[in-house]
Length: 77
View (cartoon, rainbow, N blue to C red):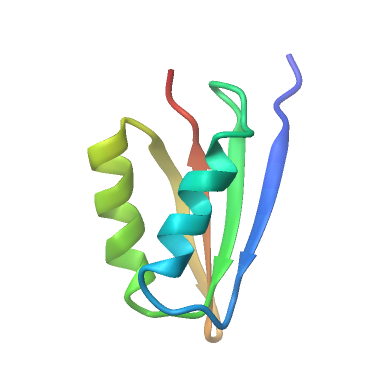
């Protein structure tokens, strides 16, 4: 089974824009598909954790490389 990965570049955007853009981008991702997000807002770490808890999506990965945060969200059903 091949999993499609969509990518969202939210670098330079501040809260709540990365979350709002991710919510919109997830609409185009099939259930079980992945959305990879790149952000520079340090607050996005807690924001994406809370977003996934409240929406039924799974935060598969949350990493940091320099000032760029990378999130991988698996869309729920």
